[in-house]
Length: 312
Image (cartoon, rainbow, N blue to C red):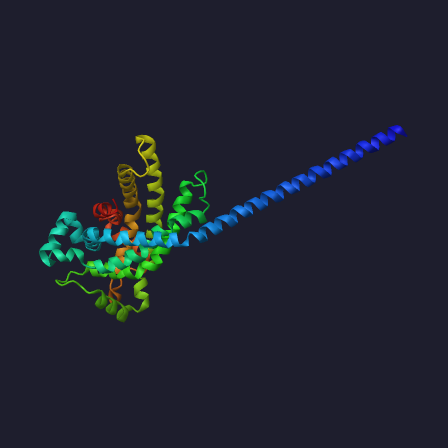
């Protein structure tokens, strides 16, 4: 009987121990879930609390872009002319600039700059201002969790959102830059003409290639810039805020951006500039095939130097 009692006691102790262990595991799991939930709630509250800062960031990005584009707009005009015409393409950047100035005057290099201001105020402000919120949305909450692919995805998402807002101004800008008339085309006149001939849909011509371009551009820029900055800092020992660090990082990102974006930029320009009554390309894929077939694959990178100058 004593042996049986001892055996029963051991069994009861083992059972109690298992119950305690099970309860402790469940309690630990519950605490972990509560901790994660609290962290998530805190992250959401922090994001909401930073709304004024986000708006300020978007506004500053747009303002800086407007100032910058005023100075680099001539490069964009030259690039666009080279992309739409094989004649300009054969002249190169210097020859194209000389021909534009000789035939249309120096001010022709700023054709469409007012449309460019509107484009930067919408597209660039959102693409840059939404990058950090998109990084958080993709799980980039710590240095360890911030991978290259996540940064690329965040940049692509921000770029796509920005391009949706900026596409109408992109179309207007492209048409005004491509105009070879002696006088500068007005944005109001170009808007009226585009609407009368193509309707609302005309303002979203080339939207597919523009979104693809924006995703590749912003994804490459944000990811490569961050990556290049890390390499520069580790190799040179310079600080994050150093002008040399920022210059080298921007130059590296600009080169990779030009390599990846050029084909999309070419297709976008061709689609946006084609007249409604003489349609050549049906969509981005059709434009890609026809350019490669009729002009050769390297045509997709026509305007590489001015585009690199603009990005860098």
